[in-house]
Amino acid sequence: MSSQDKRTASERLWIGFDLGGTKMMATVLDSAFEVKGRKRKRTKSESGAAVGIDRIVQTIQQAMEAAGVTQDQIGGIGVGCPSPVDLERGIVLDAVNLGWKDVNLREQLESAFSCPAVVLNDVDAGVFGENQLGAARKSRCVLGIFPGTGIGGGCVYEKQIIHGKSGSCMEIGHVQVRPNGNLCGCGRHGCLETEASRLAISADVAKAAFRGEAPHLLAAAGTDLKNIRSGVLADAIANGDTVVEQIIRRAGAWIGIAVANVVHLLSPDTVVLGGGLVEAMPDLLVQSVSETARARVMPSYADTFNVVAAELGDYATVKGAAAWARQVVEKG
Image (cartoon, rainbow, N blue to C red; front, side, top):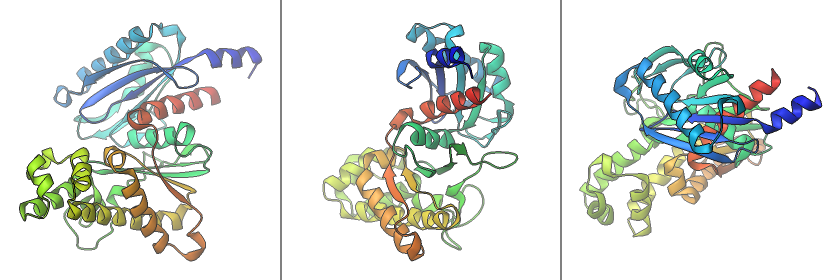
């Protein structure tokens, strides 16, 4: 790469896009991945892929307008999707929440903006972001686990996202941790998601509240799962609902078992825990996961990894997707 190319690269701006949850977010980032402008919109899953892509394009354009930049300043676009993704071809394979299947999002974005685009799983993007810019900077191998409605996982090894031949992988939420356990949405029994996702935690907490074991939570949120959010759980613990803390520690222990299994396979030096549940109770979950994982690995592995809370928050996916776009573009 010539010095002129390097100078040009340092002046490029990058677009990061998060297509997850109930809202989508586009950000414009400078070469240091500081946010120059952003735009959020509600995700409309019922509209289909064509309308959804138009909405993505509009959101990116509005973020660029907010940042006061033009299309020719953009070096590339990175999109994190809540779906298995063909990383090489930029195809969204099966986004159940969006109703998308085999959608070539990269091709559509490159056509709309006349610049390179990459498409990756949203958790992969978040883990890559933490490796490049957050809690796992300079780590050789990073395992990321993001408990939410389900449990997402990702792994970065020597600055490369680990993926399979035909799509993204590291679906740690569907690792079986409890034989003959609860039925999972995937159709199998005993997956990690059934024991340690926020939804699973909320269900156990609701039962405890119904039995009168969590009076503060019962008064604050009742037993409706949609009201038992991460912040409500943290408040219940702070106000003396010890059973809630016990349930969350138990969930952390299940995650720790899964971490121990991956440590034996990949020996990550950093395990990053992210998502809203971890943001609300970082110390509790980091401690529970770490203690269980260290107790379950072979003695020679016990001191080879650190468990940490993610640092990038809502920007993990957008910054990670943009950072991946820059790495792909600059490698040519």
